[in-house]
Image (cartoon, rainbow, N blue to C red; front, top):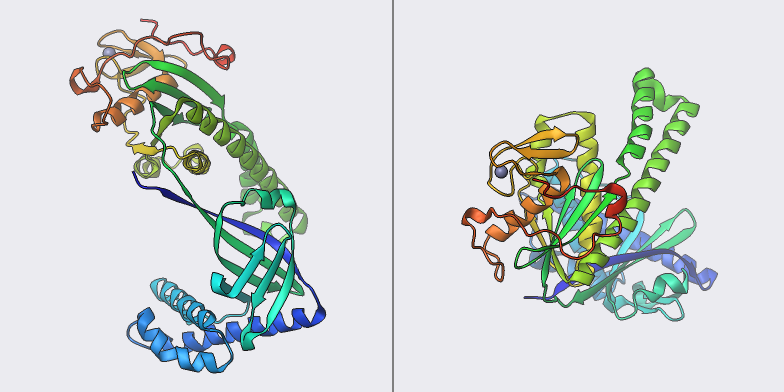
Length: 407
Ligand SMILES: [Zn+2]
């Protein structure tokens, strides 16, 4: 197994030490922007966007004469190439840069995280010192991380810095498999040993119902005011307020639950099995209802957080096609029918089970069938009934009461 790289950005305001430093920095940002524009202008009408090697030949000497350092120049033509390519791919016009933003690579800055200072090397070999306005708590996380690039921005008269950190994570040996089923009302997870015993089951209610009430309100208003809502201040503000509430609920929830799921995975040393949302998307496209679209957006956000938290702990993620995972009998492979609310029943073998738990079992089977080393596959096609949960039921299950295997 190869190591994995995590990347994270720390954004903050920065204060130049002196007035001279501020002036020099803004002058540098202008020079940088104009240099990028110069490269854009010269390559825009070429038949083909030149390679980095050709760009180097074309622009190195010229840009160095403006006083830019060697690595500034490299960043300038690389950035110009990126935006020209992006604009051409979208059939757009020649990019015209207005913002004062510069990407600076690690040869041209020094960061002291302990003292929260940044020294930047500008054109003409001038150096400026900036104080990073961030808390020691935020910075603490990045001890032991490597930083490889920063961006510096001037917006009005304020300076902002983003630092890009990376860290490699050592992969760990996993001992169990955790299947996670996300649906509109619940997130359910089940942990299986490699010998197919379900050892943990947990369910979290989602925040989608709460989000939905805000979404419905917004949609209703937008419909009522048709295209004019944007131009009525009070209406626009109210919509923004509801949007803000949605973002807060969503953010809090994704963070809290994503973290708890990753902690459980950590505790059980699990490989995480998630639904492949690209496969799910095709189903949703056919089914254009509001709830489905909302769910897909929520699933993505949820998966994103889970994946991040899990990777950070050196665990593995696997994706399986979610097709029929909540309609196939885990015991005989027959078709399950709705019996009573969320309980499904197999018409062939009589198996009954909670819809979400069934989905988890099937996700686990789908993963196990793809030839996972260590997973015993005795039953044909992988359909077998996992033994009943051992030990006491998870404390969270008491309130939601999942009825398991009551055939
Ligand atoms: Zn069955």
